[in-house]
Length: 317
Image 1 (spheres, helix red, strand yellow):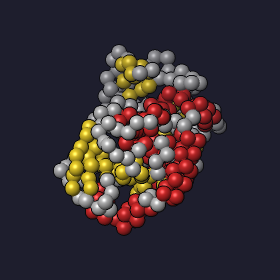
Image 2 (image 1 turned 90 degrees about the horizontal axis):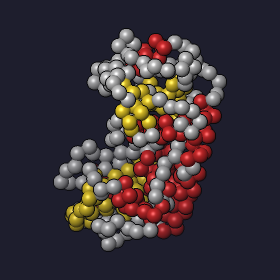
Image 3 (image 1 turned 30 degrees about the vertical axis):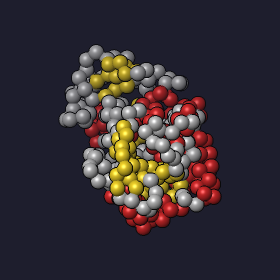
Image 4 (image 1 turned 45 degrees about the horizontal axis):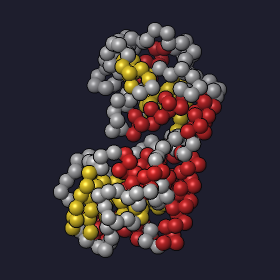
């Protein structure tokens, strides 16, 4: 059951789709979303079924929900996010169904939490890891729009692009005037050096982004995803260390596992970036970060097995 399934800009959609794919390796999977109960909509390997209209993109009330025929009484239900409205729906189905959620904005002792990263779930959450794929060929050729490598890559935290770089990148290009700072924002990569913009190229595909990651000195993610911090994991899998806000739980976990550093303020951001210009430190961090990311997030079979074991655990309902 997913409110975020169709929201491709939301990290929870990416995680929910990954969990559904892993679950399909050991069981039949039905995807339920808010929406009109019409003909199932094909979406990749799954048919997506609407179970009723709610407020906005929220779940319908139990009285308005139209459940699909053939939903087994003993079906295990996985929510992308446990909310008040989804909890009402689950309670209406009865207490016999096992319930799991990837994220939670409300509490329910009978719903277990599946966490891709240990730090992102509440106490008692079951860490299942995840598979975060990358194309290793992206590391063989730099992005066609740039004739240089070893830049500081900054992933913006702004929803809308502007003429000036985001605050974090502005401090970096001012504090490190001889460094090339590449800012990715709204499908565009712009190059800044000494507070001046030197050019820009489009980032049309995921492979374009991976090429930028693979050839960077460090990847500074100003707004990492809260569930698995996907871009941080992708960067680590290419052997590029990360520098992330210490308040970003998932990303900070990856950094502290050996793949990078965290910062709490502007001074920490500048000091952390400077640290990666020490080649010995960068080489050691790149090696340990890549080993960590490949082990935890590079094996799709291990992810499917971990999820299957978690779902087969004791019924906490």
